[in-house]
Length: 140
Image 1 (cartoon, rainbow, N blue to C red):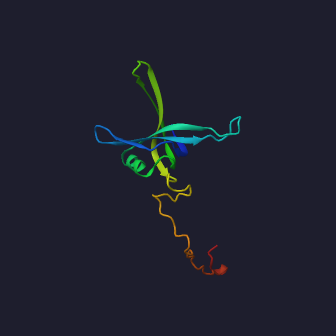
Image 2: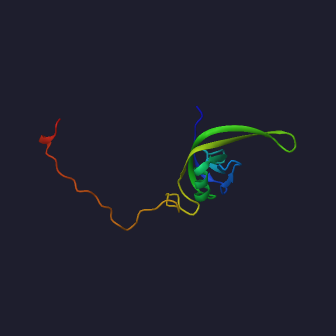
């Protein structure tokens, strides 16, 4: 099984590209804070490369910016390439199956960014009136 679930903040604006066959691919890096503090009492972060494909790639490019908080569900994928100096380089990316926008760089962490409508703040909420039920009419 190869499954990764991450929540973090984008370290840079997403980069959108198109393959030769016209498929959209978006790349960004996610800073994910570690669970425990280090010896200095600070919480370190891991910087994880994310790759998103097709329509979801276009949505990520459109709605996410540096600083946006998002959740990513996907799988780890490793690959290698030959660098210009002749050495072999290895990469590890998370290929996203799902990306959920938690906040935008302009919005707050409450999910009220540009892409999510917020509820009116000053309007009272309607609640349904409850009808009293006689215990004798219950079938059990």
